[in-house]
Image (cartoon, rainbow, N blue to C red):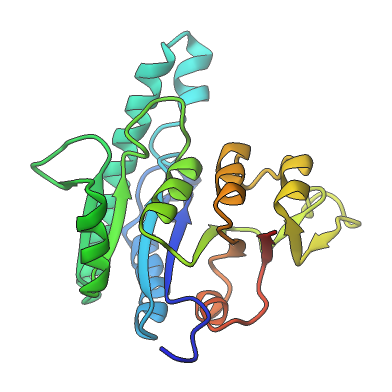
Length: 239
């Protein structure tokens, strides 16, 4: 582990990482692909925790709030969607031979452990992957914010936001050929730009606790091994 820049990371995935056709549902093959990406850094000796969103199962604004649903109800449904994704990812990781635990911010003891900070750290120390489901357990907080919170609670070295885009740009690179790509941003710049890949509460929490953020394309070859070994990938957000 001496050649590693980061020895414990929290990987934040959107629900679309597991999505089936059309961006919805769970595709087991996609879950297996994610498991292989995680295995690549586990095999280097890195301790990995994950937070996964639920957008492939439930989009609170479009599916609920825009139709008059009460916000707390919509958010609780979103939390349960993340638990489903966490269980699917746990299954894929364990079939790849990687011991995994799901811990949740709301109690569903029949399928997952309740989140306890010391127990989560102990799982990591024993070489287990920990997946945090159900966000923070509270409405009004996104899974990005849950990822920032959990990363700090487990004393992670970095928060890695895995997306389908290779970095942060000043505008959508798919529709703007002149979009500027950033290798590094300060927390303040990221907040002022209202970086779309992560919400402002999550960035502010990382700034207050000096936790570096990386925005990377999960599907690029060896992006996670390169990151933990200190190579320049994606966009680095820090002080």
